Length: 93
Image (cartoon, rainbow, N blue to C red; front, side, top):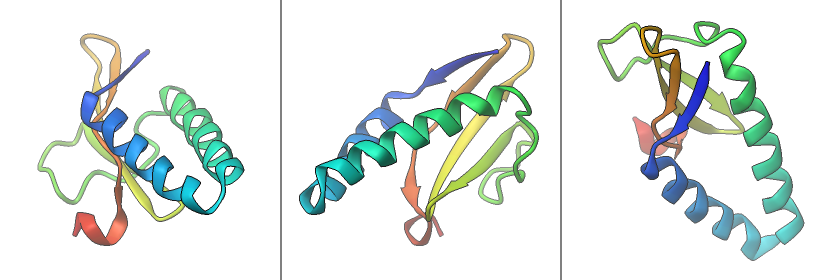
């Protein structure tokens, strides 16, 4: 399964990393490395995480990472998993 990152995800992640880097560049780098590693593992069991409570599509799931929600779409026909974005949990409600 191929992972596709929506441009919104890339933009939002960049903003989050800039915010974290204001406190510590090493923490921002560690956050990004761990997140990318965890996102890469989503392809092993894409339905492992909860169905998104914000969409009425069983193929859109929410992965929670350190207080952030990362919604992703599973497309079995095209064998892809699209990372849609990343937001702070409270902002997503």
